[in-house]
Image 1: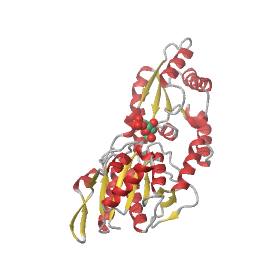
Image 2: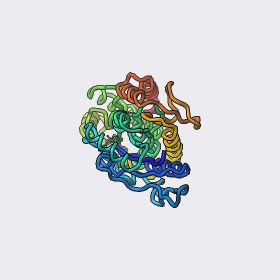
Image 3: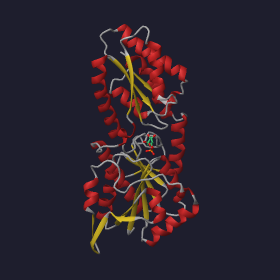
Length: 361
Ligand code: F6P
């Protein structure tokens, strides 16, 4: 292994830069050059490379000052994309030829489940391993993906701030958080922010059921305890009930007999995806990056590096918290995670149902 390429792909996540730094430093320590690929798979097709290490002699190579300094930054210094072109075999072949022409022997892809699917197909042409990064925590086999911890801290901080103003005016706030198909951010932040309810797509509730549920929480909160000053509902964006319409509908339901209660909405959107990665995201990024380089050096390919997997079938590494899984296994587990058949999803849904009554206390 003489030279490794690394790219970031899909929705960016805090911790991506920490993973790039880890790959560059670990590889450099092994006298391996590292180049970055700009703009994810789009840049791979076009051969847009930048150095992440510099070589000062036949056995002296170090990570660049830029990647060293980037570990604490959100986003990705390489840029990212969602590439349509990479879906086509001729562009993937061109990408593989470009890597070989640049003397690259292995590729590290830092990204989410769409990026893992692309890597799984690309592995037919070129050695590739994946480091999971997605604030949604919607990737199979790994307990955590990069960005989740930072996103959760951002959401909890935002909910604390919203609760300050909600209490000042005795308001209900419906806060929408990211999570295209997974309600993990909503369910986890709801517990930490002591929300009064959480709305997640995994429970597959109808609009009528959702509206009744939120109305019930508002009534339970304000009718039973006149001193309660705030109701906080955290809703995953994947719940198919537009937040502005839900807000309006809840307000209409309670207007008559709770005239002093206002219902408002805040959509956190991409705020949830930015910010400096937390210790936990940086620590996980470093250990996953180390394992990714080690896997390529050992000749592995078509695998994802997983953090504290909750399922069997992983290949152990020197790090007791890190295992490697074939990408086919990751993709199958991701599908189960998102369609609800996974025991992980079922456990999460059961947990939310169990604490629903408690949340509103
Ligand atoms: O996949 C992560 C994610 O942040 C989702 O939670 C969100 O729905 C999506 O990306 C937004 O994608 P984009 O940044 O392309 O609008």
